Image 1 (cartoon, rainbow, N blue to C red):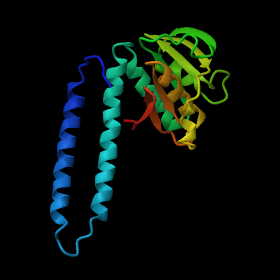
Image 2 (tube, rainbow, N blue to C red):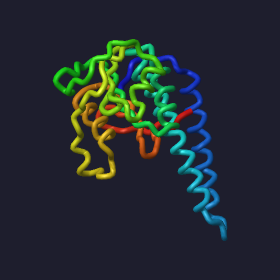
Image 3 (cartoon, rainbow, N blue to C red):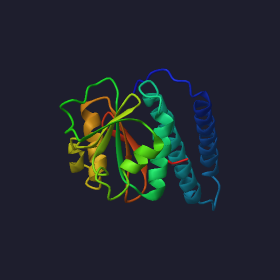
Length: 203
């Protein structure tokens, strides 16, 4: 996916270093295949875990790249998602980019406040009137809460996806919006873009 130029050089360098280490680990594993009485299963499990960790940190890197041209508050968004994850508070945060979302979402309750970590987390506190539905962000403003998003048809192929994840995928199938989603069941944080979900591991 193309993205605007962004300056997160340390993150990119760390990803390069980790990928190079993974390649070396794979090469060593291939060499040990010829050794008698050597079981590869434990090594394969470690490689898989290593790869998933790299994938998650790559998601964090690209999420920052996708958000930074459209909001100065991407750090607040990331920290809020991590805090919501720790508490298992479900969340759905839509960041509008170039495409208008008018007509694609069912408008909720107007907020009209600057994006702050505390406000975002309070909006998704369980039991509060606005915790269901999605928060809509444009630039550095929380425009509204309790918005209803179109659900993706992908549920036919992925029956385990919950409503939040289907909604995150659905709106990104129809626009270039970026959506952060926190699962209340697992605490897992993901972001959706162009109809795909990418996992993020909280820092």
